[in-house]
Length: 115
Image 1 (cartoon, one colour):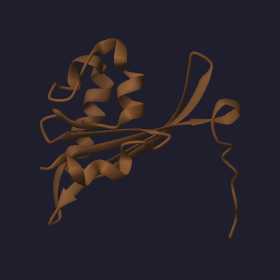
Image 2 (cartoon, one colour):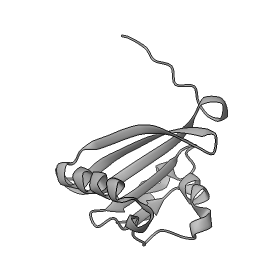
Image 3 (cartoon, rainbow, N blue to C red):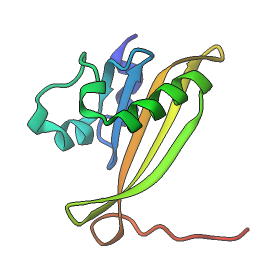
Image 4 (cartoon, helix red, strand yellow):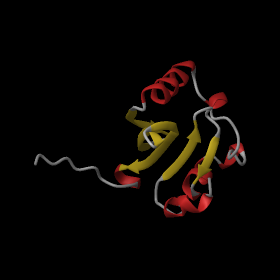
């Protein structure tokens, strides 16, 4: 897979991380690399060692079902929304993509609309 297909995400103001079906990180955009800089270059490495057993179960379920997992966290006083979803080729799950964005005062406000 050529990294050029991910160029659209390189400078986004949210962290984008993509892994394959084995949990090997294929891509991290600039924001994701900045977020996890203290761990060194993670591209080509497994994302499993830095996850709890509960998180590993969720990752396995997403890879099995092609599903979605979304939630918010507060880490160090920074509120983030995490959106994890399977990515597919020809309908077959190939791995996961995680998008993490800062919300609130240090990020974007998240209004809710009824339409």
